[in-house]
Length: 240
Image 1: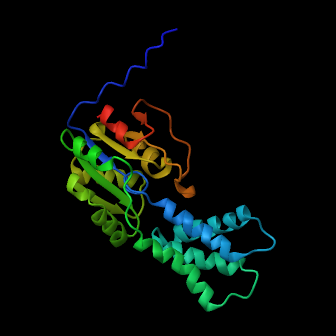
Image 2: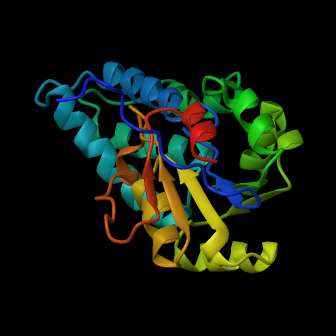
Image 3: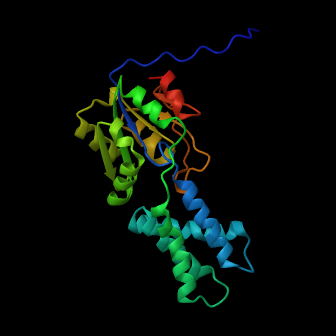
């Protein structure tokens, strides 16, 4: 048996359109929501439910609210309030409810934390390829995060959509005037980044994140040969 290291993948030719997810691909995001949820569970003090059971109730409330109202800190704050009303064992008062909802609103004030090596990676890739950011959520909130991140300087275009499904990928390809055969989606979410991009004929680079939002979990479509799995964002430099 050879002890030599595995052969690295052949670098894909220059001139590709690389479309990046924002949250938990380029910047840390869900860790802030997770911390708020932990603080919420601390505050509920439910005598009959474990922390996991309380979290399951919150997840269901959040799922329903997301379907009805979309994404973002305001919807998250609403979900915290709705779950608090459902779970509190003592009579909830308005001050406590306001404090719970403020956990979600405070996320808007969080300092932007870049994924390691993101700027050097994007700067190098931008020399050989055309870069785009495609993110979903509340338009003003997501646009502000892009602006505060300082990453806009490396990309050709930023698009904020309500949902990242197959129709959204067809639309961004049309906006960019790009054939799916030379476009790649790069992200951490199987549901929003990987599977719908593959479904429209794009390539996809799956970079898992330890704290990917529970509602974004899904089995990755393993069909075809345009799926690349990496452990870290900086490894893109060995592929593109």
